[in-house]
Length: 248
Image 1 (cartoon, one colour):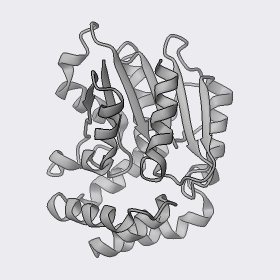
Image 2: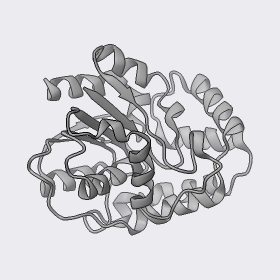
Image 3: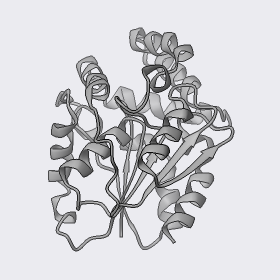
């Protein structure tokens, strides 16, 4: 079994932090894969495209040996990664046997004020305009996480990531454009089980977006009562418990 973990806006595989190893511990026989799009991580020298199709083709080519029809592939994706995932199964419907969407939303299904909550709009613009890496990463974690237990350690790691592999402004803008313009199909393929996870205290993307996805696409829905947008930071064990129950 292969479990793919796909992050969100201008986030790379290292932003999973300890969550990747925690997934591995929960599923010791699984192969954990953390694909990256152009513009982040290993590929910061390549500009992110302004559409999901090119991002998907790029990632898929890097792992093409896993899409031979003989593999059991599960994909868990957060935020913008969830949007990419929806496009992926439209383009290649047999690549994944199960999908988990975490705190995501879509044009045509969710109103803009739920996709980017008005209270966070100024914070989002402030982050975009902040050149200092340390200050920017502190603003980000304050917006996406409600559990401050390990914030200082996480911020230190995030600053290190951005110093080593800074994301170009053009890549940031192109990813935003892709997120705002992609409009998914209105039905979910019945042959692919869907798990939707959301956080009720998400200040960036309202949990009501996930409720709408569940109403339209079906699947299983679970809403965390206190976590923020970055669920793996705020309550990784909750995610792992829901994932384990659902898969088994």
